[in-house]
Image (cartoon, rainbow, N blue to C red):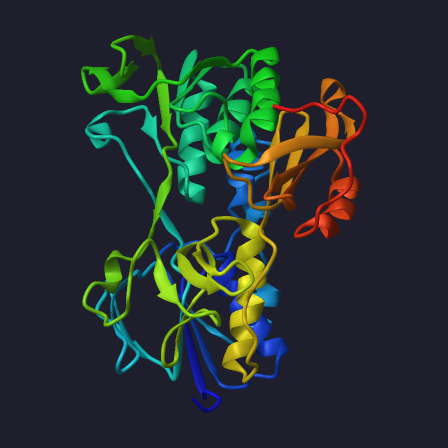
Length: 398
């Protein structure tokens, strides 16, 4: 496909905005349109579960760019009007209001939709956390709550539990894993995270699923666990994962399977690309299809897609990376952690809550985990794909 004269970015959050900015920096001077379902100007999502929810930041501070920077993009922002369909052959997008937008190139950056529990829409006091409005509504409820239950022991659930506890509520974290974020961190680091939450007063009800919500007079009163126990709650936060926002692509002609399926250039079809949480692309370095739900990937993938639109021909093959902040801990993960990995500490001491651990499979390092040792974790990142250094004497193992 020749260089486009017009680009439509569907999704005006971090991935979408970064794509637009990268296009302009790369020399694109054509028509540029950003279509967003929310009425808000583009804002950052990681602060929602931490700085915004805790009240340390006002909502305005989460904005990705001031008005002057957005104006300098010379882009048309269509906000508060969700995409409802796409014709891949003509590259036409129809919106909820009936607009029809067409461009030479379309970038899909619609992100995720939170999963919910049956019946939660009928009960006051039950929340999800995906948008700025979600965060503000949840904060209002948390400030008046005595007992909070967070359903979901992944990244978002653990972050919300930490923030809610910091606001003074009694917090219970429930989920099916043995420890918070076990799937993302492995047993050693997840175990240390469980201890951190317990030390800060979070009640852990892990290793058991949730069968439903309990309510009275239209308001939630508790969470029923799979073993029959009921955990009382004034407020419940459902953080049981999210699904790629692809429902609007039904009948589009694109392949959708746990995201928009793309080649190694993040191309879903001629002139159509996907970026961020919604993109499932072929990672040539790992030899597999991959979809990453994190802020770092949203930015890096946006740069790659913009370059491809402007004529470069390079595969997008990053080292996966994410971080999480909970209580006084910043945990960083470079690479991919699996349940089969052998995890050993190579720097620091888990007892001091400052350490770096390496994950190995088949004798090679597949991931680096850092706990309050950001610089050292970055240095060890170079060992991914190699045998790596020897563990520290007496280094902890799961």
